Image (tube, rainbow, N blue to C red; front, side, top):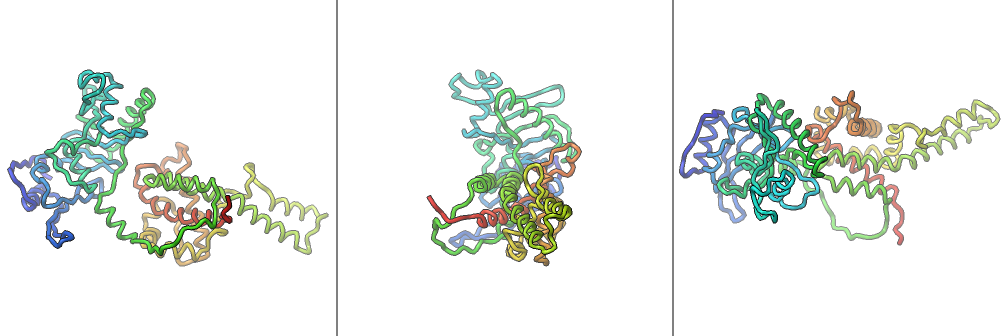
Length: 443
């Protein structure tokens, strides 16, 4: 893109905006659609680069294109993992922040921070009738770090990608709060992301300790077009109307873990770990059943001799538990549990009925989380494959040794995006475990 190109047009239509994009080498396309009443409209889709990928932004013909062209959005690129943009030419990085345990509107966050930094008098009285639009958090001879309302460029690139219709000439479009790092050199997206993470981790950690005010960088949101594409791929489930009843009740602890997973649907890592714990709850039950069967088989053997030391040792070996009181190692217990709650055909049918899962488990993307492939044509081996894959991913989530950092599945990384598919199959298995252990409902 040509960063020196400027435009000063009093009124701009969608075709003029396309010329502007073409002149600045921004990939775009104009198409037509129809409203419900049959009226035709035009829209333009442009590609916004994010590392090696692109976000798609769609703008309709009633957009204030002139306000967008007056901004410097073409000088920016996206930052992977985060709802962030950066510009090597403008020497800045900007990222939306998330406010934890803060239920008030975003604009009041700055008033609260102004009180912490004791600058409220500059912006309003003690009752807080006014609040700042931006706060300087740190500065030195080279760089400055601010928290405040987003720039016009961020508002356009983030909100329009999210499906919002905005006018950059209206100030209310920039009420999202962002961290802005100014006067900073970042030649590549990877460097920009590293700088963003280092500065935010250092400053936000101090804010958490000093002010009990936890905030963090906002994970990157998919564009509305991408969300729609995935929704179409998943398809609508076939639902037959069923009357609800109180025929069965379910175990309290697994249900708590299941609802925790559902309530954290925006965090695949939280979901995966909680759903894994649902299965883990039933390990002792199914392991004990397996051991009971093995013990019975030994005792029923006519050759078994209660007075023979070797036979007694063999019996004790089968009954041996680990220090936690469980039978066998965790990987073995997972496999045993899966075999009791679901069949290989159940698993294969569930995957094949969902095109996105079927495609995922045959792709190279699935191997980014675990080298264990699933044999989608083997109704016996699929359970072994599944237990190995589930346990492998579980270990990559929970193990925190510094030496294992390269194999970790971390929040706000591409791997977490892939994890959504494995969460789907794990949710299926957790439901099967809960149902298998249900009992008649009583009060």
